[in-house]
Length: 336
Image (cartoon, rainbow, N blue to C red):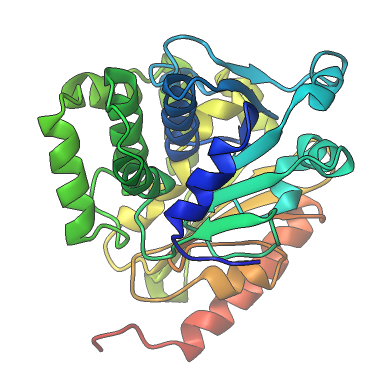
């Protein structure tokens, strides 16, 4: 495995093949969706074919990125027979086979050549071409560099997709992964005609009443610990049903509590249907939490990580809170 940004190697990989499968992690976010659409658009202008398949539906407020409806939800009956026709797979915004679930397993079993482009900590070997840069704000920022290297035509769908990728993964340019280079890339996308106002409105200003109701329920049941440095809330199946919101509508909720004054770490516990619990770990940017997530089999960024834990809700809450308290007790935020 070779990581880094060897764009020539990726270009050679693409040039030698015709029909591609593009996929990304479960519960796709704006960066995942935007990266898929930008890469698919590039492949098509190169005379290639692209099939876009994800394990989960595209959240409604990210469908503006995929206006042509290219992305399909994985169906074994429909998509497994297609795999023998695929020359290569390009996996975007994830370096963890487990987060591709059944589709990832099918890709490996079919022996399909794989290229991976990501900006997270590498946890698995993902094919023969694996290009990862932890300093990049997003996979969209990396794809921008690749498309410039490849002398691609920056069509409107590519420009909008890349801008949406960067906008969402930087939290509208406020997270610690935002760099001067990130702003330079965003500025160039604006010069190329990115519909920044429309993209922001469609992603952030189209919340359903049910989503807003659920948000209110969660905020009404916040918990605090460690002298206010730790905040957390719990998304139960009962709350989800009571609000009428869909699970995909909880995207972004994990960011809510870390905006509170004095909170260093915030946690969101989400009850699964199969006896598991999903935990979202967020830090204000002074206490790293990716190591905490790793203790429970998860990972991610230094200040934004996640884990799906094979324990019920009560057990998970107890175990994660105990470890988080230890972390906050042992860790002095930078600058203090």
